[in-house]
Amino acid sequence: MDEASVETQSQELAGPCDFYNYYRDETRNPGGAYRCNNSCQCDGMRTCSQWGWCQGAARPSVSCTSPQYHWNEAWNSGGSNRCSNACQCDGRRTCSSSGWCQGTAR
Image 1 (cartoon, rainbow, N blue to C red):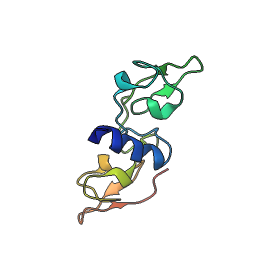
Image 2 (cartoon, rainbow, N blue to C red; image 1 turned 180 degrees about the horizontal axis):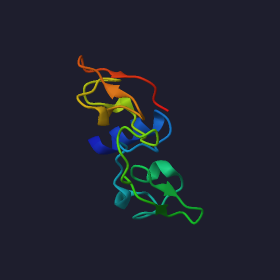
Image 3 (cartoon, rainbow, N blue to C red; image 1 turned 135 degrees about the horizontal axis):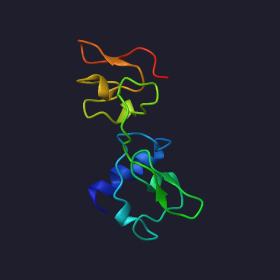
Image 4 (cartoon, helix red, strand yellow; image 1 turned 90 degrees about the vertical axis):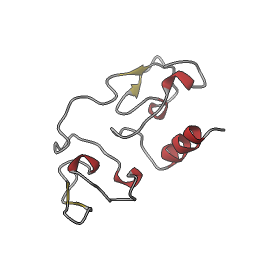
């Protein structure tokens, strides 16, 4: 099992996968490229259709300070809730000068 597979599995176990920072190579899905059994087999904000295909835009155009912006702060490279800019914080949260996400997400 390669490192990307391990990371994807750990993200799937962490909870829902409908986040802008959820990366999945849909071409490597067990049922074939872009086929899915659940939305965790689809990249980013894409979902699994009733026919078993990944659908929608993975990272639709929306401001990272919008309440509709879904970012899993636990997956940040600096650690949970750590940030270097507001786009690494969920919803309307912002990045403080000390590098922590602050405010109300949604």
